[in-house]
Length: 286
Image (cartoon, rainbow, N blue to C red; front, side, top):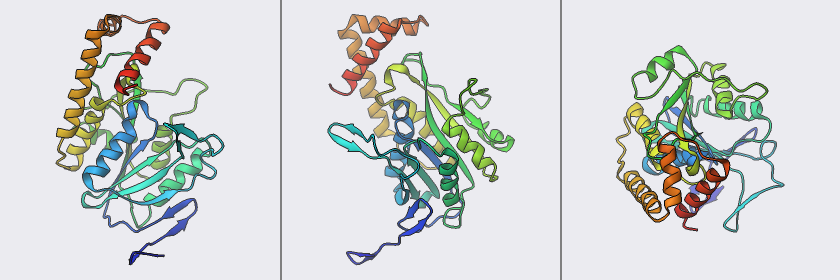
């Protein structure tokens, strides 16, 4: 196919549609699932792509993995499922942003690994990014947790400011998280990896948690020597904190709720729902 004098390379490999061949050596893969708590995973991927010049080089077709009979609509715009790979070639990084598949998890994850483990990519390690809901308030310093797939990866992570001693088991009767499943699937291919988690205050789950996002970006900045400029995200953090401070001044009830969380006192279900609703309305400008 020729478009404005440029040759577009399109290759089909199972459900994968490759639009170009990236120039990579021995890259690492960073995975973010859409609709993550606090928009953490997709926010990190978008930030890295924008700052590092990440360019899409292919996507996975939604057939078999994503339902198309219930397309989500936001602000009168249909949100179709997307599952795309990007290459930050100057930094030898591959990023993957995708809606979580509804079915065929094993087939989907193996399809992804088939692509990133082949000659065009040949990734050496992978990281998933996710938010975990917490009752702690936004004024609490964010912790950073990691679950490694191997002893070697655990040793590597020990050089960074994160909690690598996390113990977690899926609750009885529940299957592992998608990120855990990906880690296990990659390990079977001898690809080391880690799941990275940052707690998100429950009343920021439906908005954006810029503080949590910075925590993850700091790790990748040190791990890969990216020399990221954090001015933009620091301004977003300051703006969000100022807006939250203002709402506490204007609405004593909301201030009381957050104050109780700061004192490790719980809220009733009704109070929690009201806090979520009011904070979301404030931050989304509704």
